[in-house]
Amino acid sequence: MDSKALLKTVVKAADDKKAEDIVVLNMQGVSLIADYFLICHGTSEKQVQAIAREMKSAAEKTGLDVKRIEGFEEARWVLIDMGDVIAHVFHRDERSYYNLERLWGDAPIENIQKELAP
Image (tube, rainbow, N blue to C red; front, side):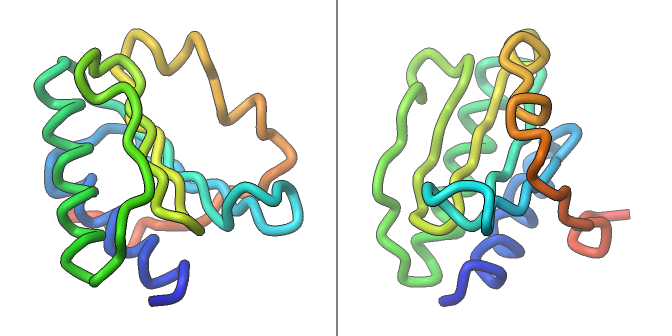
């Protein structure tokens, strides 16, 4: 599965669990770490875990072996490494503190509106 198709799959998974303020940074040419960073947040630890669990499950259903998940138990900042796509699922209170969008400000933002439920 190419990185763009994987990205669409996990964006939909995050949206299905009501992740808020989903932003995708195109990291191609900016970082060697991944092609895309998906950044979103939930309003409680339970929601953050539900979003992360759904994204992992959706990726695995495509046959992808999720490389690593960090921070799941604490549910303040969960990182899901899917190779070319890395998802950052924050608790609302943590997202503004770390502000990855500003940190990676030279990465273009992908338009994902058509992937989101109306």
